Image 1 (cartoon, helix red, strand yellow):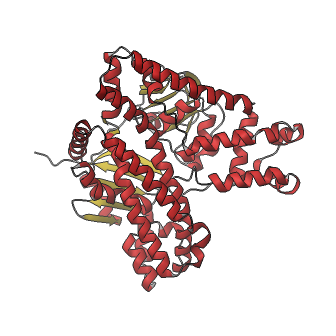
Image 2: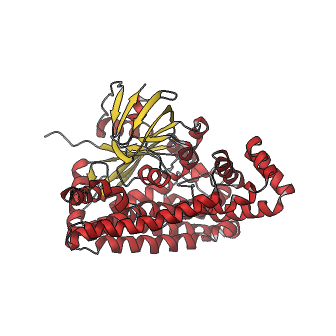
Image 3: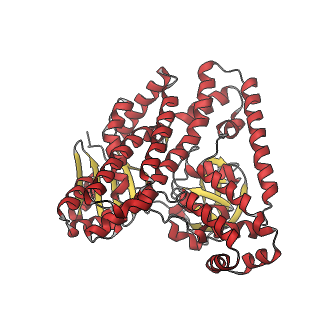
Length: 500
C-alpha cells in the first residue's frame, strides 16, 4: 500500500513561525486531550506565506471522534465557547502592559512574559482549533448538520438567517464607532470637501493642527481599535488608517444616522425572524440545540481570532524589545523557537544563519515528535512527503458555495496580503485564497468576493453577509484561473462565476 502523502488544507499570508508554531504545538499536545484523537498539522513557511498540510486519514479520524463527542454531550461546544472567551480575554489583559512597559523589563522578565504567552496561547489554540477541525474544507459537520435539519423541513433558505449572530464582533464595534464619529465631519461642508480632495496623510496633519477636537477623537479611536485588523503581525492601524475608513464612508455617501438605525432595526428584525422560524420548524431538542450551536459557532470562529489578534498586537512591543536586545530584526525574532528565545536572552547566543535560512523556507510539525527543517532538507521533505497539486486547466466558468447571495460584474483584483490592497478599486471583484481581517479596507470596496478555500463559516462568508456583498467561497481554483483585471460575472445566488 503506497505511503499516505500530506495534502494542503489552507494557506495564509504575512505569517512567521511565531505565533503559528503554537498552533501546531496545540494540535499535537493539549488539543489531542480535548478531542480524544491525534491530528498532526505540518506547516511549510516560505517567503511570508504559510501552507498547512495534513495526513487526510488523521484529520478525518480526529473529525469523526470530535463529532461523536459532540453528539454524546450537548454541552461540549458550549463549554468550548466559554473557555475561548475566558482564556482569550485573560490573554489580552495579561499582554496589554507590554505596550508601555516592555522597554523597562530585564532580559529575565522579557523571557518570563514571552514563555507565559506561548503557554497560554497554546492552551487557547487547543480550544479554538476545535472549531476548525469541526467545520473546515471537506469536514463540515456544523454546516452539514444544520443543512440536513433545514432540508428535512424544506427550510434551507433560512440558513443565513439562523446562523447570523446577534452579538457584535470587535470589528463590528469598531465600524459602529466610526459611524458615530462621522457626523462630526459630514455636518461641516468644508471638511467634507477636504475629505473628497485630500489624501489621508494630509488630512491627519490638518486635523492635528486645525481640528484638535476631531483629532483627539480619532486618536482615542485608534488607541482602542489599532489592533482589530492586526491578525498575526500587522501592521496595526494608525490614525491615517481610520481616516481612510472615514474617507471611504464619505465617498460612498453613507448617512451615519440612517446606517445606525438600520443596523439596530436589522438586529431586532433578525431576532424576531429567528424565533419565528424556530417556532414554525418541527424540530426536536437536539436539532434546536444544533441551531443554537451553529449560530454561536459562526460568532466564535471570528471572535476567537479577534481575541488572539488583540494579544498579538500587544506582543509586538515585547518582540521589538527582544529584537533590540539581541541586535536582530523583529522578523528574525518571529522565526525563533521558544527555547531559542530563552537561550538568547540568557546568554546572548543567536544562530543568525539559521534564522535567515528560516526566513526563506522552514518546515515545522510533528511526526510524531517535533521537527523542523530548513534549506535542502526542507525542499527534500516537500518533494518526498507532500502530494503534488493537480495542474489546473484554464477555464471560463467556475463554481463554489454560496456564502452571501447577489450578483455582480467587474474586474478581478487578486488580494491575498495587505500589500496587495493598493491594487483594489471600488467595484472590483476581490479574489483571494482566503480573506483575513487585515484585508477589510479592500473588502469594503468589493462588488463581490471569491475565495479558493473556506466554507459557510469562514471569514469571507461571515463578513460578506455582514456587509451585504455577494460572495462565493470554496472555489478551490479562483486565484489560479483568474488574474488581475480579468472581467467576470458573479452569480452568488447559484455559486457560479463566468469570465467575460
